[in-house]
Image 1 (cartoon, one colour):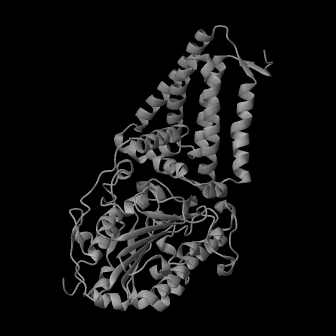
Image 2 (tube, one colour; image 1 turned 60 degrees about the horizontal axis):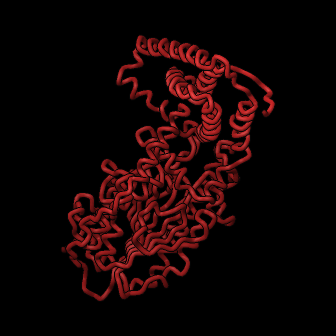
Length: 517
């Protein structure tokens, strides 16, 4: 039999384990009283499983490692853990994972996870009187829990309104936060449903001039670009200066709200007929989207991917994946761009950028685009001075603007063959340390505006405005409206003249701006 360095009884383990959870969660939740209550409830439920002696070490070991990893991300980036965040983790590619794993991460795992696990493994749990000592320990923890709940009751913390106010603790208290998130993600991803077809073959109204041109619509899905750092949105730096030559044909919507704060939600929602209020990630992966509608109505549809994935949006259309995700710059998805289509068919091209993805924003642009210096070159944002972090982020926005301008220039060569429209928006925004919060993926109702307010612009050259009979001043007026990602689905269909049961004229940016139908 293997020699053990330590010996203890189940009674002591049942007493120490809740103290460990309570201490960790008090730190994670800024010493919130509710973190103490939730920790005690979790500890009591977990201790119920200790009735099986063989389960004690594996269960505690699993929780130690899970808590260590979770505590690192919560403490380093001040993020909350919910099903959206966990879905992001599950859909993260190797490139993103490499950027997130730092020396500090491994220190957390070793100190908070591996070392306690080794101590636990080298500890012998007495067999004698196990059942009796187990019951005694459970009684002590249960008694303490009752006292806490009574205290919460007399404090008024069990009031429904107060519970809602303190729900953020559920996103921070370990292990319940990642346990609930894992359960929700598993439930959403493995329902086994077939793809639900929508009313995809619509009535085609080719309202534009019959001059032999086909339509070419480009949708650029940016990554982590927030509206606050766009000079088009009033930002003090010239982050969008490369777009100035195209200003007369740009329609920039200053008040645009994203569908979510994470790529895994916003990208499928962006192309969905359902708006943010009705969007359901679990159901949407089994439902056709606007690209399917274009596919069924004679358009060539191409998705060019330079991010972790298309989040199931491109499953039924032609897809090109570049490099291994975020390891390449976004100029790759614009290479040979004019050659990817001809004027035989109408076409929709989607470019899914790596954009301004963190945590190391300096990897999102080439060295010659480091206009704002000194820039942060670190994958732990809070370890950089705030000014350097913003500099690296702004450089990534400048580079994205440059690529947009380059694309507009390339499209000039095919204006005689196509009616052209380019849409650009970001999947979500980003926190750059405001209120101590970094990155994105906060629960939507709790998320700061920096994570929800995104850029949204449309570029239409003069030849297309004339061919499609659009009034420029009307589109400029539309750009002053408050819109959301909900508008993209209906505006694309309206622009293409495709009317289906899913189409909502009130969410079509172009519907009131045509001089003649």
